[in-house]
Image (cartoon, rainbow, N blue to C red; front, side):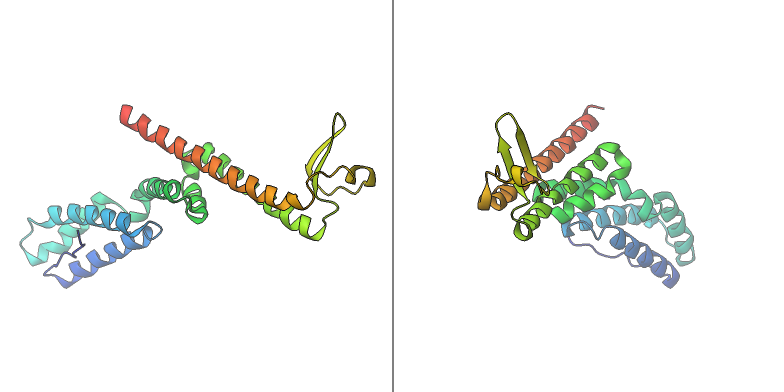
Length: 204
């Protein structure tokens, strides 16, 4: 359905209403168009139902202000809903920008989201190692000698250890694959966390 603005007879009421609509649109702009529209229409419906019984033009401002006070400030009342919607969008699209936005919005929902944020930051270590391998090929790699040495990455300066680098030019493709693998694994766990949270809400 398409959003339609409520038309007031009183110009002051119209200005107050349109300012409130702009606040809703500003707060929800991080969400996709469908979610933005759903939230806007839901709140608009509450406003319409509340002021529909007001016939006197002079009472429109008072009635509207009372209604908006009951609903609350958009930036406050919509915060939990936006955080949840953004998390749903992130786990559906696997878009890294959406994921970081969703995690930041959900920081107040528990330390688990801060942990997920740190896990995603850990993935940057793979990017660091890839560039390290390009500029310092002899000092970055997978060093292995059975029973003595096992080291992945690191700036290895010891010549005795450098001779045990086993991946060579394959180090970069392996780092890329590991980075992608961990990205999808962490995102899958985030999606699982969201599903468990949703199921717990239903039970309660």
